[in-house]
Length: 237
Ligand code: MN
Image (tube, rainbow, N blue to C red; front, side, top):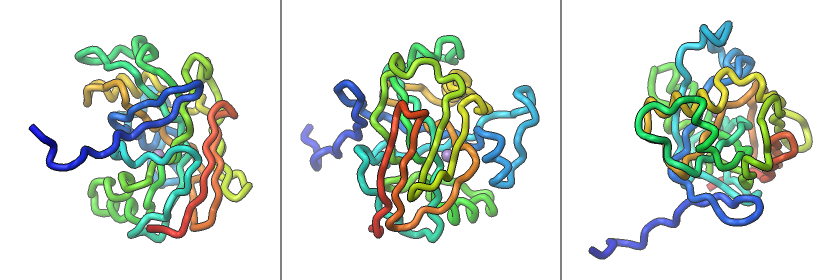
């Protein structure tokens, strides 16, 4: 059969050292740092045994913006917010069934740093009505991401830092040691809901300090200096 039209370009992220990472899906974790949960007015778990289940949502694969490119200010919002996050990249399919957290590291190819850009006004309205977050989270250009750094080069994540500067001012600063759900735990939880595949990216959630971005703002995100992302918000679409 002949395609009715040329297929859309495969979304890809460059990998340090060569090659590219074809994107299958983008999973995102909400409320994964207690300080951010509190700043959003949500209850933060008192302990690891009191944390309930993680909050998940998705972005379309073609929401990524790569290569320190400009990001257009999105339509339909007056409150675009930054959320700096660790990004985990999988290069193997999970086995059928639930993924044991101990087996999760074998699926991880690389890490990066990204922004979970959010139309906060639309998210607040959705939350107030008990509606889904899709229009607040899964819009075009909503997932700027650094080049991916092979996991072997990153080494143990431990308590590595996440940082975000906007116009040279430090806006967000957190430690991966403060994740409520760590990477193996999140991959396990996702595996109970979805078939994880090579090409999946997972945005791991943001620390406190989220705030507005405006046209002309320049951002610089860092995963402890190992992966960095720079870009500028432009006048919009
Ligand atoms: Mn987020």
